[in-house]
Amino acid sequence: MQFADLRLAEPILRALVSEKYLTATPVQAQAIPPALEGKDVIACAQTGTGKTAAFALPTLQRLTGANRPVTGAVKGARCLVLAPTRELATQIADGFRTYGKNLQIKLTTVFGGVGQNPQVDALRRGVDIVVATPGRLMDLMNQGHVDLRNIEVFVLDEADRMLDMGFINDIRKIVTKLPKEKQVLLFSATMPTEIRRLADSLMKAPVTVQIAPVSSTVELIDQSVYMVDKRNKPQLLAHLVNDLPMSRAIVFTRTKHGADRVVRHLHKVGIKAEAIHGNKTQNARQRALDGFKRGKTPVLVATDIASRGIDVDDVTHVVNYDLTHEPETYVHRIGRTGRAGATGHAVSFCDGEERSNLRAIERLIRKQIPVKTNHPTYVAVSSQERDEDRDERSDRRAPRQDRGGDRRAPHAKPWSDRPASAHPQERPHVRAQSGRQHMSHGPVSHAHGPAPTRATGGGPVARPAQVGAKPAASGKLRPGRGAVAHRKGPGRPNVQRSR
Image (cartoon, rainbow, N blue to C red; front, top):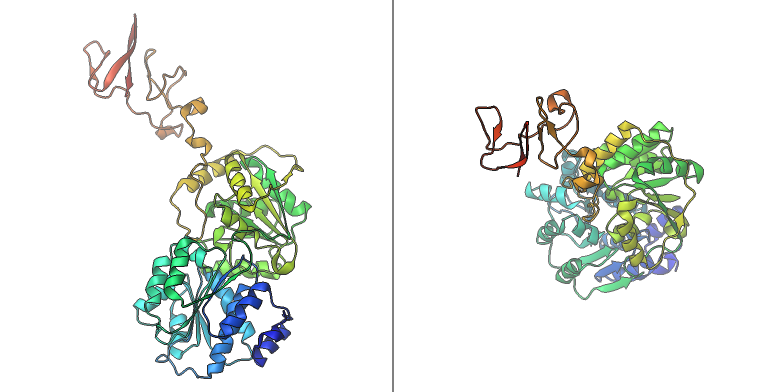
């Protein structure tokens, strides 16, 4: 269907033509007509299908048709759009500006990570449209800077992502400040029960638009997987970036630490890359994204905060450097490529601990992902890289702070968490300085030489084995409470093992 067939206003059509947008995508063709009639709409469609225009175009037409000028802070905003991340909020605002460039529409974005004063000033001067993330909007509402009493259109974009990031309670609080009579447009890639309940509480006889089966993959994306040890992933990535080649690629990691580490490895081999994750400032994240869009940086390394809503043209490859344990997240990640009918490639790295994640993904998409075997020749891993690998495992076990990131799979057990029997060389032990006495808080060690101590940097500090033991007159150890005799023989003192 052509946009000209959707009864859009002439200034909006002119803006679309100038951007060479002539044909509506399926979600646009089905969602725009009921939205233009003022009906509530629930649209469930996978990422990359043009959802922003599906709600931006009818909203712009409604606000223009009412022809009521903004009169300042007392008037307040007429449309509120909620988005889960700063990047998505910025992208949505850019879409409104592009489609409404021939209209007298005022807009501002409200999100955290930057100073609030410019946002407060814009709200005070008066705006038609506010595109916001829930957290910063709640802050400004609590300070009395936001007036939502005259909202005519309420848009909730990436609703399921909001649920994943823990924003559902903030959304419910924001909704209580909206007027009863309003149009609600809800867009989501999936429709969990909690989102369905929220929709039922907000909407009146909504029109449901279902474009594709929930969590289905984009058919035009070529998917493949490499079975590779974790320590060899950096070399494989560098090889593929140069060999395929990847002219514009997004690489997804599980953790923020891992994203920074991948960037360092790529820089070492002369590949330009930038990281984008929750520990970066908003300005740093925006610079990295802008450089990627302009083609200055061919590789963008990201946590799952960027797995949805980042609309960058001509992404040739998505690399799942770490396989997520949430199959739906895999679908949203690879949706960064193969957009708007273009072909794309999704490459995944799978180590021994991620096999179960791969099986879960294949069950969801109902197909087996082909395994590639054209690996490069790997070189030995340096001691520094082994230290970095250990640090990353520690970071993966730490509580998640990046609300947009991916949780670590509960069943994925790193090497350092395995029982001591799996790596006996790591068993802490103590050897007494005199005699042949051995003490241990694990299996008895027969290693020779003095015990390493923290003071010399040689290993962990040994705990005293003779808990509760009292020295005998002869200098031998006498069992006390909490200690048991372990071994006894002529000419050899009692050896104690603590429980």
